[in-house]
Length: 166
Image (cartoon, rainbow, N blue to C red; front, side):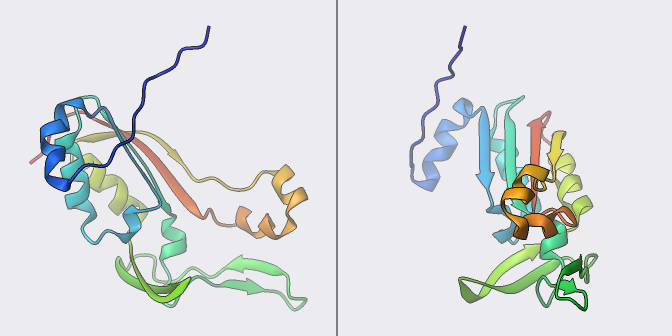
């Protein structure tokens, strides 16, 4: 037997969300939170909007990817093959300016512990964390993805509202 959940997507003016908060069971964000300056405030605000037990799922660029102030860089061997990822500036949280389609795109680096501790402080419990890397099949079909087993590009977090923290 196949059970279907009823989902709907709609756009509301920002102020209307406070009138709808008692309906919100899940909030998700795909590759957006690393563009938000105040992540702690964001997760506190999401906590306010979610019902008790509500789920917040988000993906973002992995902290290893956002870490280097001068941008991500792969180190190659003498034959031009990717050898490893250059990790710098990991513990230096803050603004990063990168080229992504255009120059000077602003995003914010946070360490893995900054991200998880912000969620915990806001009253979320962490249910699942994923750092996806390509499968062997993907690498066989797309050899250029082989370097991505050295460093995940994305972080996916599933958390649940347990209580409101002030």
